[in-house]
Image 1 (tube, protein in one colour):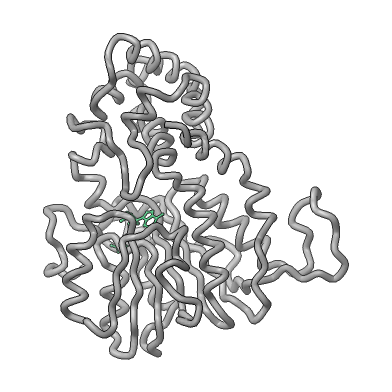
Image 2: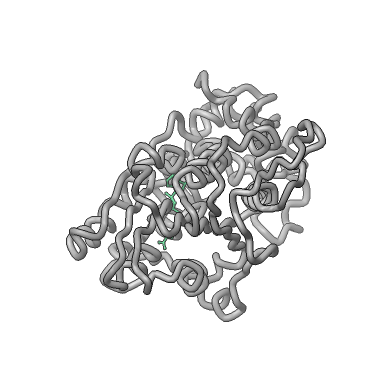
Length: 340
Ligand SMILES: C[S@@+](CC[C@H](N)C(=O)[O-])C[C@H]1O[C@@H](n2cnc3c(N)ncnc32)[C@H](O)[C@@H]1O
């Protein structure tokens, strides 16, 4: 990111930027959709090429100030919308015909380091964890969601084996008084985890991941975002996704595998349709692309990144039922907060 773009003390380094640019080739011009604008690293790098246009979105209203810099510099070539990528088609019209749709999932370093947002363990601020355009905060979830649901969220979305134990401990504390800050929550989790000193990572890592994913419905967003992108892209358009944890990557990998392999029935639960070809994408590389050691040294948060991409072919779009069926469990779990 250019130094002029950085309005915060913390910078966000765009992960695998060179790999992204070499896949989308902005030097040939065209329209690009940056679904996760963040600090604007990808958008800015694309706009350096004169024949390009960028539509960028981010659900976080604080990213607007970074976007304003690019709006000023590239008034005819850059548009920004504060929106969730599940609503991509609300802000980007079908006829735009993008050369690429890009997702760089999760949180930016700017969000993570902002103590007021409550994403970090040390935050003494309100237990918020909202990325933007949310229905409820982590405070609502931790203090009001029933114990059983809380345990399921921690177990499934955090892949935390002690989910029940932690949910019980949270319940015990919140009966006495509301759990108000991220620091309070982290110390309750540490209390629940036995021998927490033996962990390499903070023992609250998985539970924090689970609550953050739930508050922002991140897996539902990803599933719907992929569907929106498949609808919007036409022949030759590229879909790129950079993911940061195993649940995200599981979804992205399944999506590309299922909608790129020829005549393969994605699930034994679906009737075999003779000669039906469900390819929407061609995937030149089956494995994920990972950051180099050099990049990890410079930007440690990039270490868990995985990049996958596919090139849209000329098949007519169809709704990818297999995807929503396969990840029904995640969609149901993230829907559990609808009454909060
Ligand atoms: C890892 S950062 C992106 C960083 C960006 N590529 C850069 O170079 O600065 C992810 C961004 O995506 C945004 N985001 C996450 N989920 C979103 C969603 N469902 N819809 C829109 N934006 C989302 C977050 O608010 C965050 O700003």
